[in-house]
Image 1 (cartoon, protein in one colour):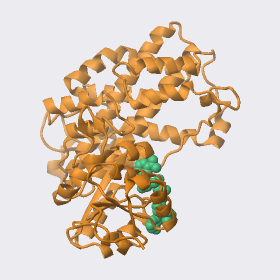
Image 2: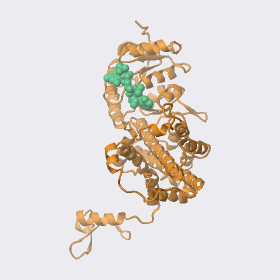
Image 3: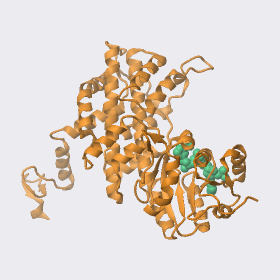
Image 4: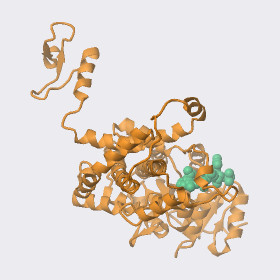
Amino acid sequence: MADTTAQANIGVVGLAVMGSNLARNLASREGNTVAVYNRSHEKTDALVAAHPEAGFVPAATVEEFAASLSRPRAAIIMVKAGAPTDAVIEQLTQAFEPGDIIVDGGNALFTDTIRREAAVRATGINFVGAGISGGEEGALNGPSIMPGGSAEAWETLGPILTSIAAVAEGEPCVTHVGTDGAGHFVKMIHNGIEYADMQLIAEAYDLIRRGTGKSPVEIADIFAEWNTGELESYLIEITAEVLRQVDAATGQPLVDVIVDQAGAKGTGAWTVQTALELGIPVSGIAEAVFARSLSSKPAQRAAAADLPGPAEAWTVDDPDGFIEDVRQALYASKIIAYSQGFDEIVAGAEQYGWDIDKGEIAKIWRGGCIIRAQFLNRITEAYAEDPSLVALLTAPYFRDALTGAEAAWRRVVIAAVQGGIPAPAFASSLAYYDGLRADRLPAALIQGQRDFFGAHTYRRIDREGTFHTLWSGDRTEVSAVDTH
Ligand code: NBP
C-alpha cells in the first residue's frame, strides 16, 4: 500500500508514452513531487520501478491518487483523446474538491474542451485544456505547452508548467493562451501549420529530385545547407536526416522503400474544418491535408496511373538556379501557411471570446514543438510592431521576403505544371497570394450568378445599399431596399 499522505504537488493520470515521459520531466525539476496513476496498475508499477530516481508517488486508485496530492490538487491527464478523457475527468471530478485543477494534456478537440470546462467549472473545480507539443521527446525534455483555462488555475499551474517547458532563447515555451478551449485551439492550429510545412518540404524535395535527378543524399545536403539560413527549422533539419538514411536491408535510400501513403491523426483535418466554419481560407493547410488523403488512395492511384502527362521527360536546364528558386518558393509558401494559420487564430479568438497574444504564440512555438523555427521570431516582431496587423504576410519583413521570392515562386509553379509534378501547396499558396493582392476578383461575377438564380442580391461599387436585378425581365436593376 502506497503512502497516501498529501505529498505530491502535481499528478499525472495515464502513463503511456506521453504521460510517463511528462511525469519523468516533472519529477526531474526542482520542487516537484509527482503522483502517478494509470488505469492498468502494471504500467504504474513499471514506471516507478524503472525510475526510482524520480521519487514518484504511485497510486492504485483514483481516490488514493487524490489523497496523495497537496491542495489545491493539480493533475494532468494524458490518456487517449475522446471517451477515455471523459471517463478520467468524471473520476477525478468525483475525487477532487472545489479549487482543485484538472488538466487535459491530450490532443482534445477544442470544442470538447469548451464543453468539458463548463461542466467541470460547475462543480467548482478548474479545468484546463493544455495543448502539449513535441511528442515523446518533447514530453521528456521540454515541450511547447499551450494551456487554456482560468486565470486562477494558471496561478497554480503556471510555475509547474514553466518548470517543464522547452526553453527558447532563454524564454520558456509556455503561456496562458486564453480561457477554456483556447489552448487546444492554438495547438490544433500548430498542427495544421505543421501539415502545411511538411507538405511544402515534400513538394520541394519532389521537384528537386525529379527536376534535377539528384539523389536523396544529395538533396539531404541541400536541405542541410538551407537549414543554415532563413529556413532554419526542426522540420528542415529532420528532412535532411530522413533523406540521408539508407535502408539496412536493401541498401536503398530509406525514403525509396517507404510506402508513399501519408497517415494522419486528424488534427490537420480539424484545423481545416474549423477554418471552413470560421470562413478563413487556410488553403495551404487544406492542400496539405488533401495531399495526404490523395496519397492514401492506392486503388484510385493505380486506376489513374496510365492517364497522360507531359509528352517529354522533364528536367530543368539550370539545376542550381532551379534549386534556389525552390528554396525561395518554399519560404514564400511557408509565409502564406503561417499567415493563414494566424488568421484562423484571430478569427477563433473573436468567435470564442479569447484574448490571444499572437506574438506570444509565435514565441512559445520556438522550442519544444515540431514547427520550431528561427522564422517564428520574425512573426513575434511583426505582431510587436503592429498588434492589430490585418494579415501577417503584409508586415514589412514578410512583404519584403515575398517581394524577393515572387518571381522564383512563379517559375517553380510553372515548372511543376509543365513537368506534371503535383505541387498543390506551392500552387495554392501562390494563388492565395495573387488572390489577396488582386485589384478586382471575379467574385463580382459570382455575386451576379447568385443574384440571377437565387435573388441573393449584391452590393455596388458606386452606391450604398443592396441591389437585385430583374434578370429574366427587362434587365433593369432594382434596389433591394425598394423591393424588400
Ligand atoms: P494513448 O493515446 O495511446 O493512450 C493510452 C493511455 O490512455 C493509457 O494510459 C491507457 O490506460 C489510457 N486509457 C485508455 Br486507452 N482508456 C482509458 C479509460 N477509459 N480510462 C482511463 N485510462 C484510459 O497515449 P499517448 O500516446 O501517451 O498519448 C496521450 C495523449 O497525448 C493523447 O491524447 C495523445 O493524443 C496526446 N499526444 C500524443 C503525442 C504523441 O506523440 N504520442 C503527442 C502529443 C499529444 P491503460 O494503460 O489502462 O490502457
